[in-house]
Amino acid sequence: MPLTDEPAAVMNPARAKRLTVELQSKLLTYRLQNWRQVAAPNLTLDHFTTPTRELALSLATCIVGDDELRSQVFPLLEGHDRQIKLDRTSLLEALVLESLLAACHDSRSDTLPIGLITQSVNTILAGRGEALRVSPEVVGWKLRGLGMRTEFMADGRKGLVLLGETRVKIHALAVAYGVRTLQKAPSNLRCAHCSSVTI
Ligand SMILES: [Zn+2]
View (tube, rainbow, N blue to C red):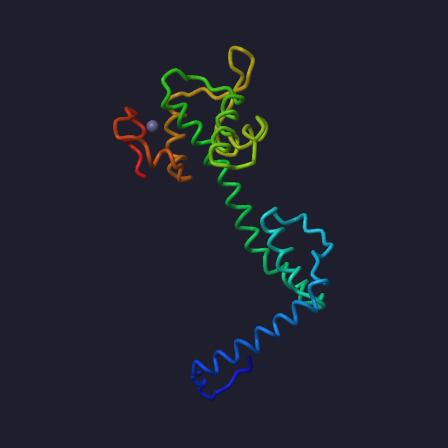
């Protein structure tokens, strides 16, 4: 609509109805004239995550006959995609910490093979309806990124030894990453570290 200094006229119901009929017929005509041309553009959008790629294609598909306008859609989605990538990165760290926290609360575990942490992360992912699955290599990198030192255990597998110092670190990081299970920890859980951390 063109910008104007004039006050907008108040529309009475009869005029609104007439306008609705007029616009609906114009929109229908536009649809009938253009629907054959509505097609997903053949573009490579590999640098986007899947949700952003789908959104970009849906938006671009709606623009018919204006390639320049269509190409302007993609830069607008860069920020949105960066946020998704960021969320995903921290999601995995939080899940690894959630698994480590569960191991801290399980008195049977003093050593934790990477394979077992991987299994636990994938179980949490599946439980939350995520299609993503991680490999032991990815978990190993995440542990390293979190400053957790893995070592070879007696059986030759690589893993994490849950020393007191490591348990303190896991709890502190779980707070920093907002691990859900820490926030929902039952009050009768006998864990000295849980009671000493501030959520
Ligand atoms: Zn605890």
